[in-house]
Length: 236
Image (cartoon, rainbow, N blue to C red):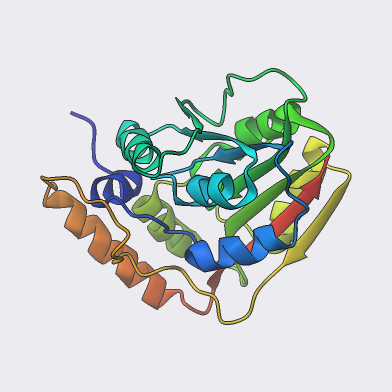
C-alpha cells in the first residue's frame, strides 16, 4: 500500500487554497495581467479548482485545469459542475503534459513545481507555452542556507526533491529557455492556514494524515524566518 503524503492530506481535506496568500494573492497577481476571453490559460496542479473557477468566471477565458491527484480532480470537477463552468479538466502529470507545443497564452502554477521533478516539469511548461507567453509560478523559497539535516526534515514532510533560493529558482527558469524572469514578493503574505469554509473534505479521512498535518504546522513554525515564497513571472 502506498504511503500517504502531504498532497494526500490536501486532497482528502479538500483544501481550496494551500499556496501562500491563497486566493486573495492569486486575484492580485491575475489583476495585473491582460487576460481576455480569447486567451488559453493552463492552471497546472489546479487542486480542487478554486483559481481555475475564478479565472473562468471573472475573465471568461478558456481554462484548462490539470492535476495528478485523482481526488483533487474529482473535487475540482464537483466545483466546476456546481458553478456551471465550462473548464477542460484533466488528470495528468506536469512532467509529461498531454498538450501540443505552443498551446497556451498563460500558465499558472501555484505552489506546484516544488512538488515535481523540476528538471522534467519546467521544460514541459516551456514547451506548451506560445512564443512570448508567460508562466506565473508561486513557489516555496528559502531565504537562508539550510543545513543537510534541515533540508531532509522539510523534504520528508512535503515529499519534495529540492528547496531552492530565489537565485536558484531564477537559474532554473532561465536555463530552460525563458527570456525574462521577474521576481515579486508581496509583504505580509504567508502560507495559508489549512482550515477554510471553502474546503471540501472527504467523508472519511485516514488518521495518519493528521500526523502529516501536525508535521506541516511544526515546519511552518520552525522555519518561519527561512521558508517563504516568491512569485516568478517568466516570459518565453
